[in-house]
Image 1: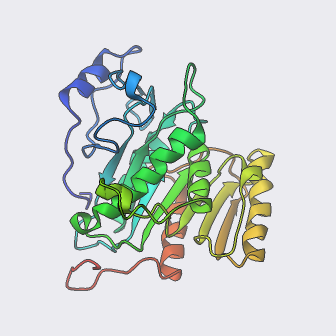
Image 2: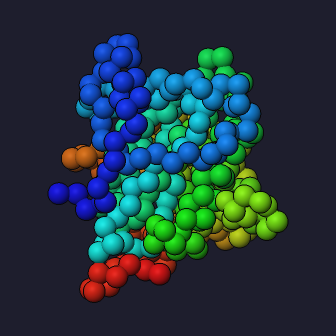
Length: 305
């Protein structure tokens, strides 16, 4: 039995959409209940707020979502007996055209929760989807930063440490993770919305085969980085991220890099994997522990405060 807290079904409307979508889908999958990032509506999405998401699933772990206009996070919380107090925002990839919420989202949420890390799967707006009016900076990044603030604002409820809230992203989501670490703010202390009073700075960053490495900038004092990609990935990743690592080294930003010789793009995480690349989450957790970003639970079962 998995150790994360009991999950709730999505609203009945979502289940109906899953059943009625074309091509036919498997029945709705149980996930924890989503939390809307912008209860009053996401800025810039007001005219499309009523549109339903398009969900494509093969019932075998694949789940692609498009037409996102109400960004959310889905929390996967560990059992208090194994909780470490560390939290991570997970940004799936999909080329900013779709969200690959299976092997780059929900499967990771389950894995992290089982291993004591609170995980929050991000649904962000898509800048490259056909007909999209969104941009990466004004919308996808706004959603990413808002999610980091929201997690911190509820740290007490979720029994996580406010100084151990990081972000990890895959492909296009890796871009968002890198940009979040590159540009952040401490929050607006005078904001009427308590979420906006929180910092958007991630305490660590996980960059799993992120695209557009040539747009990444590195400065001293940035959050420590964990990098993983495949030798056979495209050049901006398989060579570009090695160059970014050297930039981190020059700027004295702690960084760890894993290059998987037999992997290409999009390996993500799948339950039951036997490949070396598929085991990267264990290396990530070890890195968190070695970097003093994770507190192992005490024998009493109490979580970190």
